[in-house]
Image 1: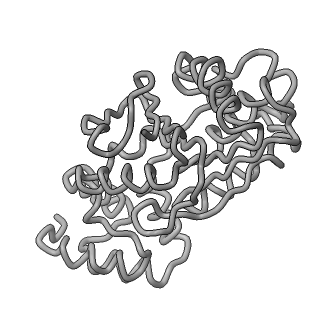
Image 2: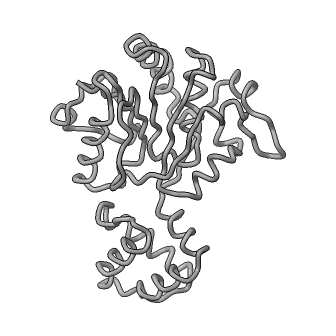
Length: 260
């Protein structure tokens, strides 16, 4: 049985150790996930687990990886990608020109920024595309840079793109260097790091649901500041922004919000 009353101290220890503020995450959900991991590592108390994280780099990396929600696939919710490709991209190009600044926030294993490159290649030459992709988790960024995916991950990729941009390697699929070159990966914490400025499109999907309401509002407010007027925020199908007007957005389509 874990010393649950020590969780407050544990949160402070994690903040000092990993610079991750667990107060911004929904507690019940997060605590359950952490307790499962601690038990898996045969540790009895939060204090003992912190001691383990301090001395064992592998366990520390495992912990960060476990905290990060990495459920990712290319073209997730294909209908929304069709709207992005057929309506949002042409409107943004018409409004801002061909040098679009696009940020894929909490990009996980790279499926999303690489999908953005491919979708945008219907409108612009690959050499004119640049995506900034960020995530809090160094391990998933390393995975993203490698660009090797299983069949399930790429199931929704349009057939012509599968043929053009992927090579089969064993049971996996390697994304082409020409797509990889269009994405710049960086570590970034949505809760505490500075946000890019002057963005025309920000894509952040199915991540903010794990945060408290206050943290969500703070993140959406920062996204608003990051966007140019008329820029678009694309969110996930599991998310809603009920107070989008107060935050300075107009609702474009179900999951697309334009900076007013």
